[in-house]
Length: 262
Image 1: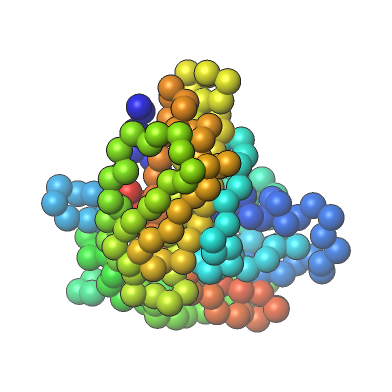
Image 2: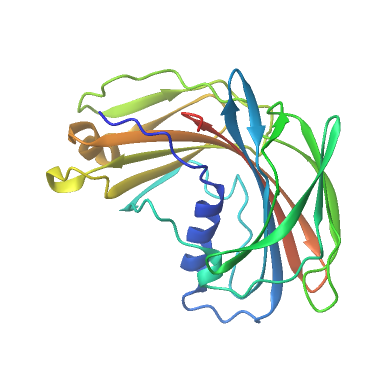
């Protein structure tokens, strides 16, 4: 089995939601929508994170929250090159720099062009932190761009998944993990495999569960993955914090912890 170390899923998940929501929308255009994502990365025995901020003028974009799709699975095409919100919506200027405060330090994110996106990023190495720490974010905003906003939230705690080994084709796959401390939290599982005996990953089963420590995936979803010769999986604990901003828009803070951890 191929068990890959995969990039964090937060921005890819948001982009997928956005692209799906745009089709057929009759919503008013020009609604400001912003994200800051904090994803855990390993650094020896500790953890670091490289926060990313993105801001858009949107239409037809629902508010992605951790609890919006509990206890659901879907099967779709997998690509290692995820969609970008910058391919769909124009970016907004959110100010000269975004302030991110974690315990014992203050860091700034500065705008940089990445593909079709303007992303606010660190100019140095990743920031050391303890998953589960509180974080404060200050977005100064810009007249004619994204509005000013500030908030405090909790980052996603360490996720530990009970190893289910090689999965036989059976009635279901039982999943167990350490439960989180957020009543609105989610644990998402992505099972990727090469359909039709392919040697590359081209199909994905995406499931989201309430973060209570246990759930299962029916055989109708997992059987093809279990029998595939090329496959991988990744689990992600997701915490979200959504606040309204001027212009009927929103700011969505998304924190993730992946297993395996990149």
